[in-house]
Image (cartoon, rainbow, N blue to C red):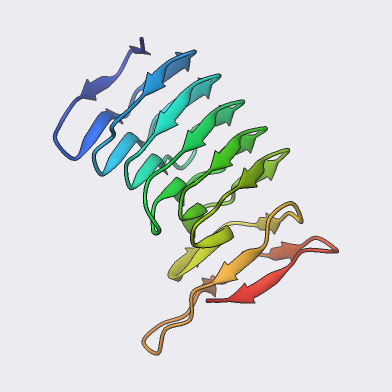
Length: 178
């Protein structure tokens, strides 16, 4: 089950949406997901030891200034463009998860996530972190060397590191274009 001391709601687009609240999930199964499994909007969360199957995005994080930890989960299935995690804002810790049989490990639109100890297999699309051409980084961010970063290249826009922010790229990090 889940616990939330904020506002949680279920709708046809997402299995669970948490707005300005807190969420703790351990040992759950999210199956046959719609567009999104869990959406975190300005909410803190601990999501661990759970299974996420199907759907376009298993967890979407839009939680600046909130602690979000996603650890020891299994993300499975979906289709060629499905993602384990979408990160829009915040500094979530994505730790020791398994990504299997989806399109992309993660989509990065902003924020400053920490990826550590994660593994992937049978990825159908980009085996790494897809950095949106609309991504805006307004805070310091470090790209770790455990997954490739794939820069989305589009004629209309490009990823940006905003004034005052620093992008640090760890030695050995692989950067590609899509």
